[in-house]
Image 1 (cartoon, rainbow, N blue to C red):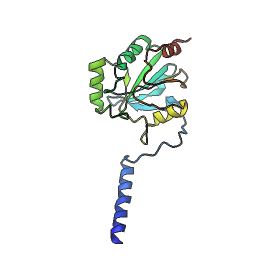
Image 2: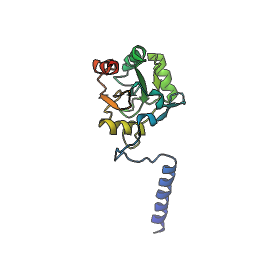
Image 3: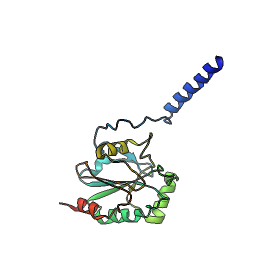
Image 4: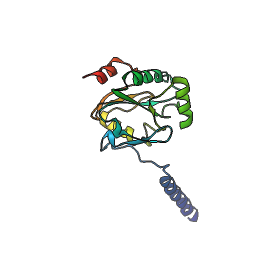
Length: 187
């Protein structure tokens, strides 16, 4: 009996420690979210706070990225989109290691990889989780507002000038696809 009580005490104590240290996360069961996209403040790859309210009046293309994926060359076209249409749309990259561990690196390694291999100058953020029990609140919001969740790396959410989800594009859709360009260039 003492062994059972001791074991229970250890389990409860470990659960409390895990919860307080952030290792125990709530499950994404309700997908009821409040607020707007402009309420988010996220950490950039270099650790600076980026307030999404600065993007009011522009389109945002939010992309979950990975460095070791068959779609990784899309960094080239995301950079082209940023260069050619940066006055209309901001590209926001969110590294995630959720699909076959294709983004294993640290934030510093990801930044170096993106710069060295693709010359990325659009805004990149710290690595987050875009699905599952530890799904970041931004991706909870995107999923709730669009009814879509990332099925792989390089899924794209287009947010309109008013902060509404204007489209979801799976990995296979290129960032320079006519459907995306037409929306961001429409009067």
